[in-house]
Image 1 (cartoon, helix red, strand yellow):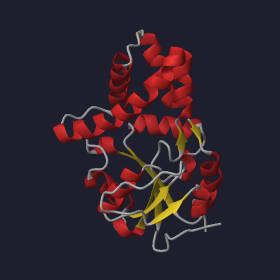
Image 2: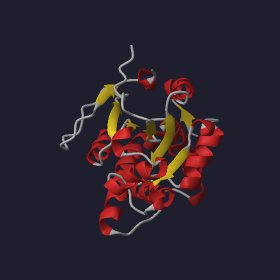
Image 3: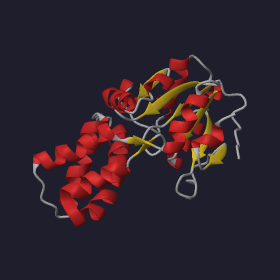
Image 4: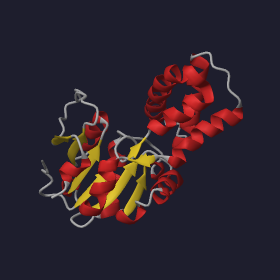
Length: 224
Protein backbone atom coordinates (compact mmCIF):
# COMPACT_ATOMS: atom_id res chain seq x y z
CA UNK A 1 0.00 0.00 0.00
CA UNK A 2 1.38 3.40 -1.01
CA UNK A 3 0.84 6.55 1.02
CA UNK A 4 2.75 9.14 -1.01
CA UNK A 5 1.75 12.68 0.02
CA UNK A 6 4.68 14.39 -1.73
CA UNK A 7 2.33 15.77 -4.40
CA UNK A 8 4.13 19.14 -4.65
CA UNK A 9 7.63 17.67 -4.36
CA UNK A 10 10.01 17.93 -7.29
CA UNK A 11 12.89 16.32 -5.39
CA UNK A 12 13.27 13.80 -2.58
CA UNK A 13 16.14 14.22 -0.16
CA UNK A 14 17.18 11.33 2.08
CA UNK A 15 19.06 11.13 5.33
CA UNK A 16 21.77 8.46 5.13
CA UNK A 17 22.26 6.42 8.31
CA UNK A 18 19.30 4.34 9.46
CA UNK A 19 17.30 5.63 6.47
CA UNK A 20 19.19 4.29 3.44
CA UNK A 21 22.15 2.60 5.12
CA UNK A 22 21.72 -0.15 7.70
CA UNK A 23 24.09 0.52 10.60
CA UNK A 24 23.63 -2.92 12.14
CA UNK A 25 26.88 -4.12 10.55
CA UNK A 26 28.65 -1.66 12.88
CA UNK A 27 27.21 -3.66 15.80
CA UNK A 28 28.74 -6.79 14.25
CA UNK A 29 32.13 -5.06 14.01
CA UNK A 30 31.82 -4.04 17.68
CA UNK A 31 31.01 -7.62 18.67
CA UNK A 32 33.95 -8.98 16.69
CA UNK A 33 36.28 -6.54 18.49
CA UNK A 34 34.86 -6.49 22.01
CA UNK A 35 32.71 -9.60 22.43
CA UNK A 36 29.90 -9.46 24.99
CA UNK A 37 30.76 -5.87 25.96
CA UNK A 38 29.55 -4.71 22.53
CA UNK A 39 25.89 -4.61 23.63
CA UNK A 40 26.87 -2.14 26.41
CA UNK A 41 29.16 -0.05 24.20
CA UNK A 42 26.74 0.36 21.26
CA UNK A 43 23.95 2.43 22.91
CA UNK A 44 26.44 4.74 24.67
CA UNK A 45 28.35 5.22 21.41
CA UNK A 46 25.21 6.08 19.42
CA UNK A 47 23.94 8.50 22.05
CA UNK A 48 27.31 10.26 22.34
CA UNK A 49 27.67 10.45 18.57
CA UNK A 50 24.41 12.41 18.40
CA UNK A 51 25.17 14.50 21.47
CA UNK A 52 28.59 15.49 20.14
CA UNK A 53 27.08 16.74 16.86
CA UNK A 54 24.68 18.94 18.84
CA UNK A 55 27.21 20.05 21.46
CA UNK A 56 29.94 20.92 18.97
CA UNK A 57 27.44 22.89 16.88
CA UNK A 58 26.28 24.81 19.98
CA UNK A 59 29.90 25.36 21.04
CA UNK A 60 30.86 26.40 17.49
CA UNK A 61 33.71 23.89 17.72
CA UNK A 62 33.21 21.87 14.55
CA UNK A 63 34.89 18.51 14.04
CA UNK A 64 34.13 16.32 11.03
CA UNK A 65 31.64 13.50 11.49
CA UNK A 66 34.09 10.60 11.17
CA UNK A 67 36.50 12.08 13.74
CA UNK A 68 33.62 13.03 16.04
CA UNK A 69 32.22 9.50 15.78
CA UNK A 70 35.61 8.10 16.77
CA UNK A 71 35.67 10.44 19.80
CA UNK A 72 32.22 9.14 20.77
CA UNK A 73 33.48 5.55 20.47
CA UNK A 74 36.51 6.31 22.68
CA UNK A 75 34.13 7.83 25.27
CA UNK A 76 31.84 4.76 25.11
CA UNK A 77 34.82 2.43 25.59
CA UNK A 78 36.01 4.41 28.61
CA UNK A 79 32.48 4.66 30.06
CA UNK A 80 32.05 0.88 29.86
CA UNK A 81 35.53 0.15 31.23
CA UNK A 82 36.64 -1.43 27.96
CA UNK A 83 40.34 -1.50 27.10
CA UNK A 84 40.96 -1.06 23.39
CA UNK A 85 43.97 -0.82 21.11
CA UNK A 86 44.06 1.82 18.37
CA UNK A 87 43.89 -0.95 15.74
CA UNK A 88 40.62 -2.24 17.22
CA UNK A 89 39.10 1.25 17.18
CA UNK A 90 40.15 1.81 13.56
CA UNK A 91 38.77 -1.59 12.55
CA UNK A 92 35.37 -0.82 14.07
CA UNK A 93 35.34 2.64 12.50
CA UNK A 94 36.11 1.20 9.07
CA UNK A 95 32.69 -0.53 9.15
CA UNK A 96 31.23 2.87 8.20
CA UNK A 97 32.69 2.38 4.73
CA UNK A 98 31.03 -1.00 4.29
CA UNK A 99 27.40 -0.44 5.25
CA UNK A 100 24.64 -2.32 3.46
CA UNK A 101 21.59 -0.56 1.99
CA UNK A 102 18.16 -1.51 3.34
CA UNK A 103 16.43 -3.84 0.80
CA UNK A 104 13.35 -1.60 0.53
CA UNK A 105 15.55 1.41 -0.29
CA UNK A 106 17.50 -0.60 -2.86
CA UNK A 107 14.24 -1.58 -4.56
CA UNK A 108 12.62 1.85 -4.35
CA UNK A 109 15.49 4.11 -5.47
CA UNK A 110 15.46 3.23 -9.20
CA UNK A 111 11.67 3.75 -9.26
CA UNK A 112 11.83 7.05 -7.39
CA UNK A 113 14.67 8.27 -9.63
CA UNK A 114 12.27 8.08 -12.60
CA UNK A 115 9.82 10.47 -10.91
CA UNK A 116 11.92 12.80 -8.74
CA UNK A 117 15.32 14.38 -8.54
CA UNK A 118 17.10 12.59 -5.67
CA UNK A 119 19.72 13.72 -3.19
CA UNK A 120 21.20 12.72 0.17
CA UNK A 121 21.55 15.24 3.02
CA UNK A 122 23.72 13.91 5.83
CA UNK A 123 26.00 14.90 8.68
CA UNK A 124 28.60 12.52 7.24
CA UNK A 125 31.81 13.69 5.58
CA UNK A 126 31.52 13.97 1.78
CA UNK A 127 34.14 11.23 1.27
CA UNK A 128 32.28 8.91 3.63
CA UNK A 129 28.99 9.42 1.76
CA UNK A 130 30.63 9.00 -1.64
CA UNK A 131 32.42 5.81 -0.74
CA UNK A 132 29.36 4.25 0.89
CA UNK A 133 27.16 5.06 -2.13
CA UNK A 134 29.68 3.91 -4.74
CA UNK A 135 30.46 0.75 -2.76
CA UNK A 136 26.78 -0.28 -2.87
CA UNK A 137 26.17 0.97 -6.42
CA UNK A 138 23.50 3.53 -5.55
CA UNK A 139 25.50 6.67 -6.42
CA UNK A 140 23.98 6.92 -9.91
CA UNK A 141 20.49 7.56 -8.50
CA UNK A 142 21.52 10.76 -6.72
CA UNK A 143 22.00 14.16 -8.29
CA UNK A 144 23.72 15.48 -5.16
CA UNK A 145 25.37 14.08 -2.03
CA UNK A 146 25.07 17.00 0.36
CA UNK A 147 27.09 17.13 3.58
CA UNK A 148 26.65 19.31 6.64
CA UNK A 149 30.44 19.61 6.46
CA UNK A 150 29.85 22.36 3.83
CA UNK A 151 28.76 24.78 6.56
CA UNK A 152 30.64 23.10 9.45
CA UNK A 153 27.52 22.74 11.58
CA UNK A 154 25.26 19.74 12.13
CA UNK A 155 21.55 18.96 11.89
CA UNK A 156 19.06 20.11 13.09
CA UNK A 157 20.45 23.61 12.38
CA UNK A 158 18.04 25.02 9.75
CA UNK A 159 20.96 26.11 7.53
CA UNK A 160 21.84 22.43 6.95
CA UNK A 161 18.39 21.71 5.48
CA UNK A 162 18.52 24.91 3.43
CA UNK A 163 21.64 23.49 1.77
CA UNK A 164 19.35 21.03 -0.02
CA UNK A 165 17.13 23.80 -1.40
CA UNK A 166 20.19 25.79 -2.45
CA UNK A 167 21.93 22.87 -4.17
CA UNK A 168 18.75 21.70 -5.92
CA UNK A 169 17.70 25.31 -6.71
CA UNK A 170 14.20 24.66 -5.38
CA UNK A 171 11.97 26.19 -2.74
CA UNK A 172 11.98 24.24 0.55
CA UNK A 173 8.31 23.32 0.02
CA UNK A 174 9.21 21.63 -3.28
CA UNK A 175 11.45 19.16 -1.45
CA UNK A 176 10.29 15.98 0.29
CA UNK A 177 12.68 15.04 3.09
CA UNK A 178 12.85 11.41 4.26
CA UNK A 179 14.52 10.26 7.48
CA UNK A 180 14.23 7.43 10.00
CA UNK A 181 15.14 9.90 12.76
CA UNK A 182 12.14 11.78 14.06
CA UNK A 183 14.25 14.69 15.45
CA UNK A 184 15.69 15.04 11.91
CA UNK A 185 12.15 15.22 10.53
CA UNK A 186 11.31 18.00 13.01
CA UNK A 187 14.46 19.86 11.95
CA UNK A 188 13.59 19.60 8.25
CA UNK A 189 9.99 20.69 8.87
CA UNK A 190 11.22 23.73 10.84
CA UNK A 191 13.23 24.72 7.73
CA UNK A 192 10.10 24.47 5.54
CA UNK A 193 10.63 21.07 3.87
CA UNK A 194 7.82 18.55 3.40
CA UNK A 195 8.58 15.45 5.42
CA UNK A 196 8.11 11.70 5.60
CA UNK A 197 9.20 9.87 8.72
CA UNK A 198 10.44 6.40 7.87
CA UNK A 199 9.36 4.71 11.08
CA UNK A 200 11.26 1.44 10.74
CA UNK A 201 11.12 0.53 14.42
CA UNK A 202 7.59 1.44 15.52
CA UNK A 203 8.70 4.48 17.53
CA UNK A 204 6.82 7.62 18.52
CA UNK A 205 7.54 11.09 17.12
CA UNK A 206 9.52 13.66 19.10
CA UNK A 207 7.47 16.48 20.63
CA UNK A 208 9.26 19.40 19.00
CA UNK A 209 6.39 21.38 17.53
CA UNK A 210 6.50 19.70 14.11
CA UNK A 211 4.71 16.47 13.32
CA UNK A 212 5.79 14.39 10.29
CA UNK A 213 3.94 15.23 7.07
CA UNK A 214 3.49 11.50 6.61
CA UNK A 215 4.64 8.31 8.30
CA UNK A 216 5.76 5.27 6.32
CA UNK A 217 7.32 1.95 7.29
CA UNK A 218 9.12 1.38 3.98
CA UNK A 219 10.74 3.55 1.29
CA UNK A 220 8.59 1.64 -1.20
CA UNK A 221 5.52 3.42 0.19
CA UNK A 222 6.90 6.63 -1.32
CA UNK A 223 6.89 5.27 -4.87
CA UNK A 224 4.13 6.63 -7.16
